[in-house]
Amino acid sequence: MPPTDGAPQWTDRNFRRSLGIAHLQIHDWTTGHADLHWANVTHAPLVVLDWEGWGLLPVGYDLGFLHACALTAPATAARLRQELPRF
Image (cartoon, rainbow, N blue to C red; front, top):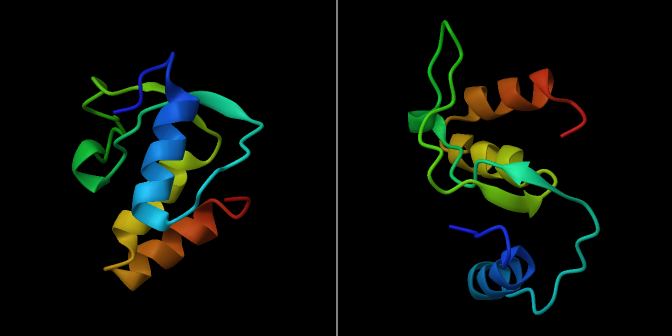
């Protein structure tokens, strides 16, 4: 989980390991969940659970992670893109 103070180092290390990206220039950071997947989201009412790993993240990280988790269910991924078009 990304700690707030080490977010740029965490991002560089994990993006390099997972995606093969050597160095990422991230200009916009925000507070985020850091583990946003479907098991951490309830419906009616909408509640986001499991916040122990929250911290400073690149803008869009949480939505990107949620979208990646939805790719095994194409209709869900399409709905997410429809509801969040700027994503």
